[in-house]
Image 1 (tube, rainbow, N blue to C red):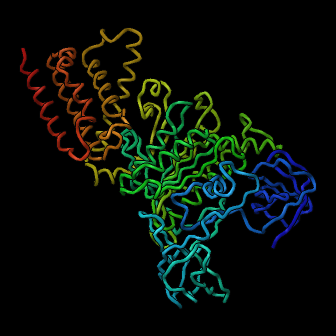
Image 2 (tube, rainbow, N blue to C red):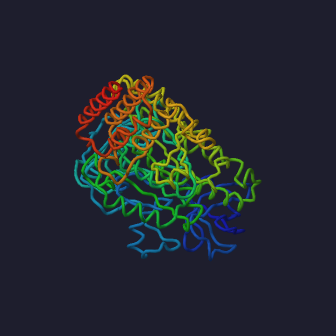
Image 3 (cartoon, helix red, strand yellow):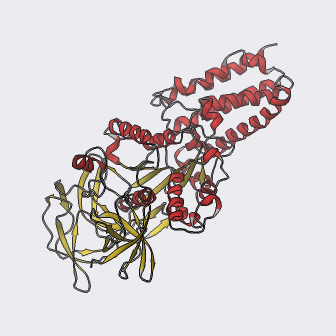
Length: 587
């Protein structure tokens, strides 16, 4: 039932509306003659507060605000993948065809193409029982993704008037569900869902398998599980966006949802251009065939930026309910928090630390805690993994967004400016990063990678930490005064940094590295360390060992061994043993 109110006051994107006693929280409303889209965010007796997702220029007191009686929702159905939306799920390509390259105020387009016919297979027949989350039909959304139309959560009953398999639009009725009360519900290829309400699941499962990214510093040193939460904090120029691009291109998630939240327009343009032409190494098809992009750049309305991450997570949950593993890249949650701060200021709320609202932590929690590996209502498995970039001003990790994010995520990948300026990418600082998923993933590593994987990882990190401690001494007194065992740690630390942690996104062998190669590379490095340590104990100086060039040859392993011929690494074990024999036998 539609209700109306009257604009009483305007403060940027925030409207105060009177004579609207029938409005409800989170209700979708349309403001002014151009029907600007908004959402009710506050209610008092006789007064409602509305945030408008578009520019409010031209609105005036006395203007009409018309309610819809429905919560602010997204439309979920085939046509989401390989598409680009703004923060409130308006397809940008359709807007461009309707009004040109610039988004006009009050433009209204269908969120999903209402005319496209989908070749649809019905999976039920008249009289079949229907349960929440059950697939009633399926269609090939893209060459690599089979889209399942499901019974919306909360509905159950029996199927009636089931259409035959054929070609249907998202608006066509496929069947009627008759619930236990005898009420009829028309089911289509699409459904609506409120963005601020998590979609229900049968059970939440503990994280048990990694999200494989092909990036050694992630997969080996600081892994994230499918259904996990990770933060990627870093200052300007440290490579947050590029690192997320690598995750999107190479991770083994079935579907990628990329949210450009308040980022610069040129960065979003690069994302759109890269993804549009990139071939998916997993499927051989285009990467866009399993990707949806949500673009809300820094010059777009601030209220839509606040809504964009909820739009993205709701879409992700929808595909999770089909049994897919979905990864969300949110770039960046700091810009989202700034939008929250601006809206809070417009609402004249009491500010907390650095002007952010007091509920910043709870809003961050409401986003990150929608991640997880779950048993769906249809008793299949799916997951949503969230990787949120954080952009602290001045690379100050003590600011509220970073600190509050750290409370909720279990994986923290700190991007270091010094590493980035030294052209060391990914610029993830191993001394300040951490992952709490290792214990959950250890059984998977033992079964699928190797029994000693976690031991090798621990040894690699130990050597890196020892190298860092020694470098502080070297800065004070120089490396020449160190004993040879410590000089060896410095040399092996350099091999680990350059040959294992650092990765070249433009090299065909190094841009993505499978787990078995990562394991073998660790074994080669640790074999070199063990053999060199034995030689040092025999009295051979590190300077003499370095003259052989063995350290540089091990660093170059990542370039010289193709991913499809990992057996070549066995030759390095033989070379290291021969190196040991040669120097051990020398007088």
